[in-house]
Image (cartoon, rainbow, N blue to C red; front, side, top):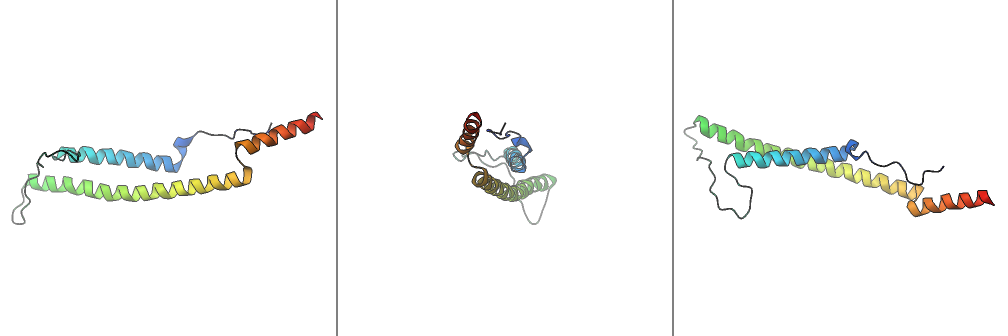
Length: 124
């Protein structure tokens, strides 16, 4: 029998899904890291940041710790932007492939018509 409904599923194996899932995980991690040093992550909040002032003349372990924590979310955010670009590129390629498959093989209605026409010809 002709495949009326092509194989589907397995979306978790797609690179685009895996990269998007990674982006989500990093975004949640950045949010939690920001919460750790006083940023609420909510636009309407007026809560003060717990970061101490960083002086160029004197560094204490707590200021260095805060600075390194602040650098991690910035680096992570930039890396996340790169991952988002990769995910978009993968999705563009996926849509392009689906478009070519649709042009070559048709949609569901066309496949249904082909199957029914073939069956009618065989019964005559």
